[in-house]
Image (cartoon, rainbow, N blue to C red):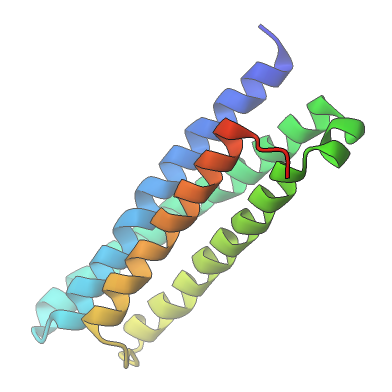
Length: 144
């Protein structure tokens, strides 16, 4: 088994684990924005914090194994794989999204949320659309 395939497999595994959380966290935000019951809000605060801190290492490991995969392919491959440059731009957006989730978490923690459940419903769709584009780029590797 080659190192390249091992890195790719781990990259995909940690990406799936990361996205499981990134897809669910905004759904918790939707419920939190809708609730008026204090005990329910307290429970959601705990769930949101635990989930975000649980999936953050997966986000980091996704990046680590992605970089190792690129390194194994080499500089020339990277230079000529324009599809990957577009993919990496989308990945940067996802890490910004992940970082913004920490800000939203803090807003809920301190009872400063001013966004509606409708905002969080749209917010929940963003990573889905970005992931779709990333999968198409990675699978089709278009000559851009």
